[in-house]
Length: 263
Image (tube, rainbow, N blue to C red; front, side, top):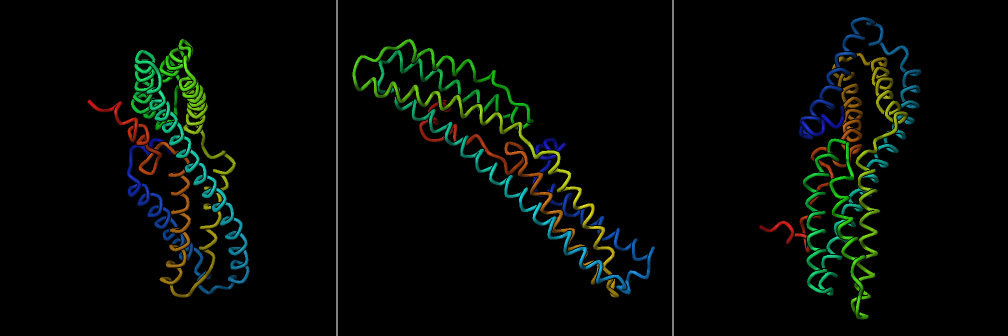
């Protein structure tokens, strides 16, 4: 569900739905609670409710902070892996200049096909949360075949050859990490804590009585808006390849790799 929302709605729309919907439901619930139990406005139980709100709020705040920081770190790690993979491809493309023309042409063809497969075939599947190795496997194998069939003849070629082989192995590892990250999502237990906690904390604010309705609704709406925005961050950050704030394939089109997209 979260993937579908992220891929079909803008972040602004999701913010309006999540934050606005949370605030609207909280305000409506508070008004209904006051009408059903008019004694709440007198604040007879505010001491107990205040302590309970403080305790639950602290625990829930720690949970939200932990989840958001974890997801933000995951997003940064994903971006690092993508950038590192693109950088290694670019470095191999530059190292190929040290090899004879047939080897250089073979590597260029394999690497060009690889970056096109990543951007045009793998990326859309990663946005849907269903990545596949198949679209890039043949290109990666072709690059290995070119290097395995070539025997360096000079010390200079040997140095660049070893560097290219090492970086090609790094690309294979980074590809696996990237595809694994596209399938990861917040564990079910943390999802229950994050979204279930909101269902506990927001109704508790209804019980904190204030004689003036506007003041109480402002209090309830503020808490609901903060929680709604935090939940929006969790939804947006949970899927690093989906939505407007996702990791982009731009590194595979920049620098030394731009020539694979010209023409």
